[in-house]
Amino acid sequence: GINAEYGGATQHETNPILSQMPRRRKRSPSRLTLVVMLQSLAGIEVMIELRNGTQLKGIIEYVDRGMNVHMLDLEVRTPQHKDTEQHVTRFQNLFISGRNIKYVQIPEKVDVGKTLDKYLEVSDKRGKMYQRSIRKAPVKERAIKNE
Amino acid sequence: MDPQLDFLSEHFDPALALKQQPPLATPVKVKPLDNLNKCRFLLPPSDPNHKSLGKPKENQSSMGKKKEEWEIKKEEIDKKRAEMIIAIQQRAPVVDYRNVLEKIANRHAVGPLSVLHRCFVSKSRIRVWIRSIKAIKGILVGFLRAFDRHMNLVLLDVDEEVWESNVSEEMSQKKHRHFNQLFVKGDSVVMIKQDDSSTASTTTTTS
Image (cartoon, rainbow over all chains, first blue to last red; front, side):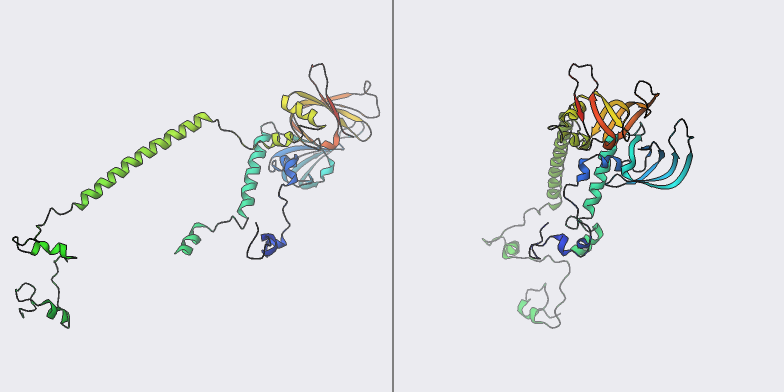
């Protein structure tokens, strides 16, 4: 919010730590698309099919704004055509560009709506924890201050 | 003991006693009389200003009374609170307030994607055409769980039909697959049709 002491400058301009951090947009545009849904799938094993037919079965580690996916513990199957054989390779760690994704197969037991809502709740709480204006000192500190 | 300094003698002189250095040792078990009113009982009964000692205040019992009253009030308040909670729970069902997928979909209630929004709301089966580089790759048929402005879709209970490229649709081998839950990236989506038996079939396209 606006800080009256510093002549109307916002916390983001006066605070030495905040001023170095990238500014967060108020209504994050990722909330308006299904990228958040993929982000909420972090830790779940899915099968991603790429545009060229390659299938990647593994655990999602992190998905970013551009839908680039970082995966762990993978099994990669190359596309099957009548002439070519299918190769299966295993990777520990793989980064795949968001542009190349065609499908993401989500296991049946995952309720997409619930996982997304839970994920957003947690990420909102975490975000609030680091807002200096809201953050309260832990109970012990407050008790010592009040003495 | 000098009678003037002896508290219990009739010749006691308070002024002299006060001037003593070191100060006189005061008797221990004496109750101090804070004001003149309290001294009245010392006067002889014949004196008009005499007042005999009344019953001492039962401090313990008055505190006890107050405590009781407070506890009764507390019980009543707790009862009321419990009733209120029950009433609220019965009145309003617990609502999952977020429902982000619905919120995203509702942004497109008006506009070209309103066709998709209609499919989303009516929970009808839709038919999605998927593209490969230069041709149509195949079709997905499933229930729409979520969508956004890029036409990224989440489909449930999906049947995929894929045909080979470089061959016409009738002649090519059709491969079928089934998925329970599928996220489709909007890049690959060409066309979407509502797959109901209703007369008007609604379509929406993307280049």
